[in-house]
Image (tube, rainbow, N blue to C red):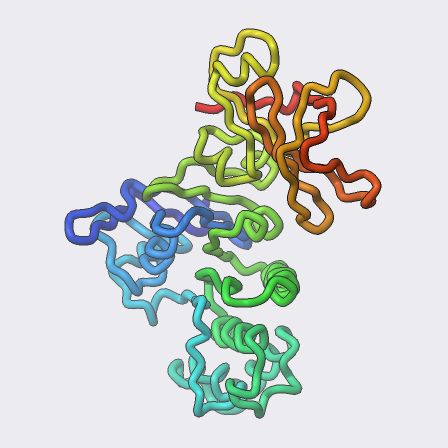
Length: 329
């Protein structure tokens, strides 16, 4: 039996559907990500599960119980927002203990649980500090600890890392995933960042315009997109119509195809039929924009050394891994 089951969920604002007929299930202890562009309905869906936004139709079953009629405090759900929403006049430990105080947990038990969860998020040494004395990453860990200390049945994370710099974001996402695994905590994570979704998730639900267009593990979403939107949103695919694909491959192609940039190769060996239009350095990857047979493509190449860099305007040979071609609707 699924631990979380969403059945025919619908939400409309002023006659405009935010999402309609949403259906999915989540197993106990699973980390699931709702991925999609801004405005696709993922954060509203999360708020509906939390009880912060009412639904128009459908059921939200948590461990077999329909929680739609319950108010947020009785759902047994913890939620971490993009904004930390910490009380500025409370210390770290007071912020974390607030939920326990609302649950009327006795002082001794509360102190023990707060200490345990602060150790879990590596903030024991900051217990007496106030939010203004913390970094953004530390504040986000306080917000996470505040949700964990109540021992929720389900943890919801609404883009909690988007306001942090890249280094802190990477560290914190690793920490969140480690804590989630240690606790076996069923988690739904919302993001528009494909890298976060691919590296953190057991499964991903890709959303667009209020619908789940594809679901599966990271490998299946990345390697086999079901349509042009999925191919464009995950992996920076080159999406070509049938006519352009036929010119590129020099054989008849009947449908649109998607080609991942890293499956294309550039070389000085072979027919120099490809023009380097421009390039961008993305750290360990060099992204080339090239033109071959009247078709523009993006090619990603590992940045091994400066000597391997192809200058703009140079002609090179292009190689294509035919096994990586993917037909898309």
